[in-house]
Length: 549
Image 1: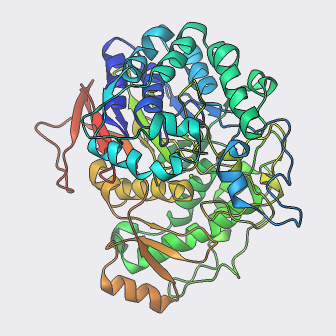
Image 2: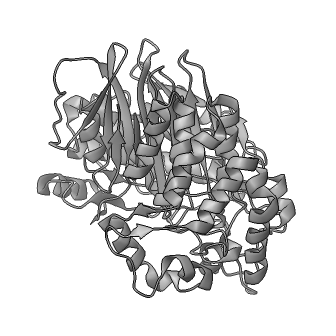
């Protein structure tokens, strides 16, 4: 089964599973397909993280986060007075880090895939040669037209004079050529040769920093997974430079002593507890987390049970704290549509959880002329200056300062859960910038504590708090009037807004006859695997689709 943000990409992954490929083969196929059919976030010009769990329970992660070009400086986004200039880190060539997506997908395939690379990439190449746009895709392209027209190369591909229409065949010949070079030459098809020449030429035209040497030097990194537990379930997630795994384990351990089921889903007591846990965890994130290859990150200290419980010791169940009085702790040493996530489980029990991104929607808004793909604006995820928020409102410190070759901090949280008996239970992740972590957290609580079907769990309304700004965000109509009033009486500043993030997950359940109950009333997908059944949860906030066989 594959669950992703776009039906053609999910179908591409399942095509590879049906051909005898494993979950990694399918994940790689899905990743390249998303670069074609979901370019707002799917990419070969960005980066991401992948968590892999083998059928025997061993796990690993692949970090293919972008890196700062060698010519980067810590003050590159400040003007002559030392003032941060947001546009420099968000739009155009200076905003782009060295892309890692191709290196990461190829590392995963080389080490853990089973089919030939050309076969795995064939669906994406076929889609690049032409696929039918959905109504939502056509409207999204047309809506971004004013921003696409900022750059001639972007307008050339994504702002035709007549616009786009639903059902129109969208052909991306230059992108297909890039994908064919990668399929034939591996990483040299992207990081050297014609594709690299095109990317560097785009940098030189726009005053960017990425050079041939930067591209040739880029390497994905295999890292040990962050592990934790929640009510006996094992949690496997991404380590730094993703903040997601550390923060997720902290959040789960913060609320574990409380009976959330008895407290009730999105009751005032439950929302108050979750938000106070979020406040403390995001304060720690701002202070301690960064690229572990440059700055020591106390992962075991931050995720330790005693430390987390100490952080929650001053929690008042009747009154909200303020972020002015809640700072980061001192542990013992030891990223909306802007991102996209997909989950894969194969017939043999291998599972892959992958989150990938350009950072902002369509990244830097700049397409590489002659290559047809968007470049990221991940440089905005560095702390341009201490205490200065990025485009998602997150602040950072020295641990996440700009530095040559450094990986910027991320909120991506691809995660896999195991049952108390050590069997595969859930594959989950989400896009959404700063709200990724809290989205994954709440989906897990929905399934384990509130006993929701995975489809209902990803569809359920969400809340979010990130320490700064000191605001409790809630999706519109997610809180009853009584709960809203009770939270304000506790001292919360509550702000309702549109729906965010698009969680996509798979739950492995005991096989039952008939169709499993779906409390959300939404369509579900079931696929039998051995003596169990895979339940797919595709977020209705977008066109996300679960495909199984």
